[in-house]
Image 1 (cartoon, rainbow, N blue to C red):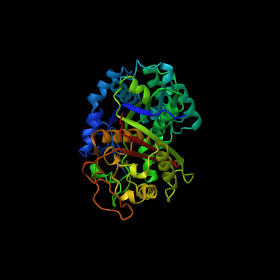
Image 2 (spheres, helix red, strand yellow):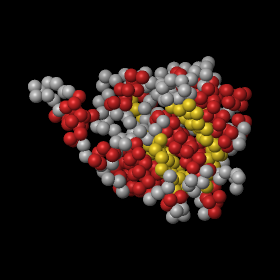
Image 3 (cartoon, one colour):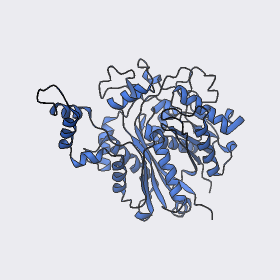
Length: 430
């Protein structure tokens, strides 16, 4: 029996370069950088002091009202609700499917504790002499200070439950936390649920807002972040010979997926077909990819096989392209391993050059970028590409968007822990 096909009928984006699909897409095609020096906390003393954050504060305030969110909700919850609402309103899906035949698949690492709150708790937990803080005293004071709603809002699955509740979804529900591949895996698992008949439609994607003192310090300790503090807009430079790390970003991306036959039946606005999903694990190291690219090669190969497309039928790759020395080199090697000579004729670009690395949200935003590229037959650029790297020798669409004939695209996501998730999207032809 032939497995059901999946249509993409709605998309929603919140990114450092634009709130809403068309604002985001205009900025991406224009090569706009969202990276700036951090101003919402003091980054003094950190080797990297920049990030790509959403800065339209007035628009963010309006989003709370638009989605009907409590002002106490976290930034990541707000972004997830808003991007999901954008996608569902564009698809006009809500009244068509039974609630128990709808699913929610979401990638996120959840909310964050404000350092000021941690400091207050530590101050109250000091020993009698006023100088020492014991772990036991801190934990006791911390537990005393917690409210139930505060605890729940820190959990990744809280965001999923919040979105599900907002739309009344009572079918399949999954929260993914596989680092940088989280939302790509969420979309892939939503596709699998449609293919096996578990759901008829799903909201799938991810949200992440972790530009905080703790996460910035952790990524700095790993040596993963760029240190070009004097020129933040040009710091993220995937595949460039002078790349020195990624810029941490934030945002959200969501897609509405439906059984293709049901989408046609209800005359839905079909943007593209999600044709294939491939996943693998390097089983190598927590922070490093296997240097031979074997995990990435396997995931890309599986995605192509699942889509029933040959490598020569892929017209564009939206790369994981983080701007780290290792990732870009290994991804280039892996692309050549899968596509052979076609790799040199096929455009490859990195959205992260503009929006930074949005971690759990990256895969969904980048898949949406592929959908828009197919829609408009335009490839967004890899900005800040100036100095070729002999080990990165493909066509990275440097600095300017490019018109091209596009029938199918591949979106790559590779994450800490050796997770690899790749998605194939193609134009829908009735």
